Length: 348
Image 1 (cartoon, rainbow, N blue to C red):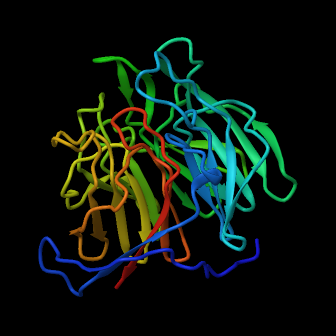
Image 2: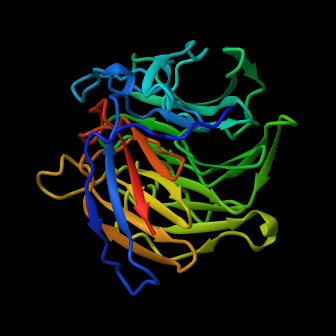
């Protein structure tokens, strides 16, 4: 697709000087930028997010008016896009199936849905589904793909893209929306070749993770944070898998300062930025983290930055044009969708 430079006017921005947790090679500065509300003001949470050079796409999620008083929260087949050229949101043809926690990726002018969780709004359970679909951006049409291999259907996975292949790490098979309900986290890692339509199994994670962050940098898959069999069981691990040496398996790196699940994550240069998340026990936090923490890939060091201006969880970020874009999310533990859309920048 044609590449457009992002020239949108900054509604507001703040610059900060970052103090590293331990000595670093150079100082950093950070800015936040407000952007047009998601869907023209329709909140979204627990959606999938994908991006091309020209657009950001949000897929599925929970209803815009969801709240924790609902006995059961259904999934949706919502599909919308934000154009960097027009600086506006637009609705697209609905996904053929309703999902939350979609594993989404954009590759070669196509948007892929590779499993997720589904809820019918009748009971308090979100169940995994292996169903997969692809949206042809140029033709504006959805096509069903063969489902994920038996036993691999899941949502809330870490997602990374390298070339024509989408990588999924961890995820969850079942999420019961009740106190002490079952939450089945997984450690499986798989790759989907979008050209061949083939799935491959890779070395499993060192431990189960869901609601976990994932990014790809120079053929290295980074999996950060997440939770293990339950929302309170948040983790701060940083694991890497070098795709050119799979036999070495996963390698542990410096741990993220704050353990968090349901966080957003993105890449700016050689830095991985992490935002928000769920599981904050602090009074007055609504169970939501406001942390902004950045990992220096080359130095294997974490930096703790000033808090998010709009704390939230249950959102997936997209890295484009040297920014990390963060659409939607929830402002309360559990359900609390908002239409917030902002972007994060680093000076380095």
